[in-house]
Image (cartoon, rainbow, N blue to C red; front, side, top):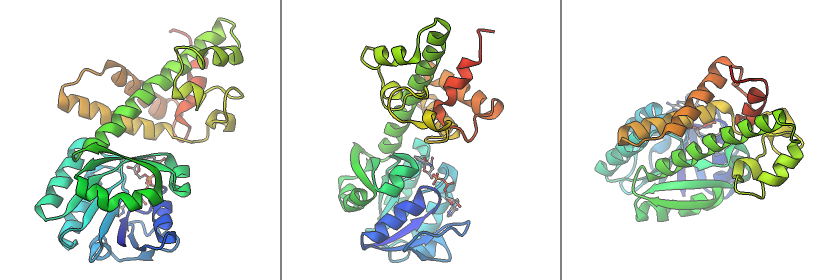
Length: 290
Ligand code: NAD
C-alpha cells in the first residue's frame, strides 16, 4: 500500500519504520522535521497524503489532529482511509471522522496501548472506532504495527475504550500505591503484601504485571528507578480526556476525577514529570495524613 504517515515522534517514527520494513511505500511528514528509517520525506502533510491509500496520523492532541485533518482531507483520494492513532478527545475523533465521510473517505480512530516499546516491537494493541469497511482495509497495517486490534464500534469508540481503560488504570495504580504505603506503616513486608494481594481479590494489572514496589513481583519501571514506562504526564493527559468525556456525557466519575487531581499535583507540583506513573508509590511513602 501507499501510506502517508504524519507525526513521526516517539511513537510515530517506529510505527512508520515497521510499515516500511514490511514492504509498504511510506512517505512521512513531521512539522519538527523528524524522520523515520526507510520512510520517504514530504514537504507537507497534504503532499504526503496525495495519492495515498491510507493516511496515518500520530499527533499530540485533538486540536492538532483537527488542523492536520483539515489540511490533508482535501488532498486525499476518494476511498482512501484516514487512520488516526493518536490519543485524543472523543469529540475531535468524531468531528474528524464526519469531515472525512463528507469528503468520501473512510476514517478510523485507533488509539494504542503498548507505549514506545510496543511501537518499536510491532506489538501495540489498537482500539478502533469506524466502519467495518475501513477497519477491513486497515487490518493488514494493524497486524504489522501491533499484535491485536479490537473493533469497538463506530467512530469515536476507539478513543472511548482507551480513556475508559486508562481511567481504570490510573485509579487502580493509585489504590495499589496507597495500599503499599499503608502496609509499610503497618509493618507488613512488601513481599508479603505482593504475595497476598496478587493472588487475592485486590489483584489487578497494576499489582500483578506492573508492580510499583521495586524488587517485588515481575520486572517493572520501579526496578529501573521509575524511568518510564508510561510517564505520569501521559497518564495525566488520558485522565484529563476521560473527565472531559465524562462531563460531555454527564457521567459521574468521582474516582477518575480524584485520580486526575492526584496525577496533576504529582506532575505539576511534586516532581513527577518524566517519571513513570507508578512513582506514585514513593510519593505516598513520604506522606502522612496531613
Ligand atoms: P511525540 O510528541 O513524541 O510525537 C508527536 C509528533 O507530532 C512530534 O514529532 C511533533 O513534531 C509532530 N507534530 C506536531 N504537530 C504536527 C503537525 N501539525 N504536523 C505534523 N507533525 C506534527 O508524541 P508520542 O509519544 O509519539 O505520542 C503520540 C500520540 O500517541 C499522543 O497522542 C500520545 O498520547 C499517544 N500515545 C503515546 C504513548 C507513549 O508511550 N509515548 C503511548 C500511547 C499513546
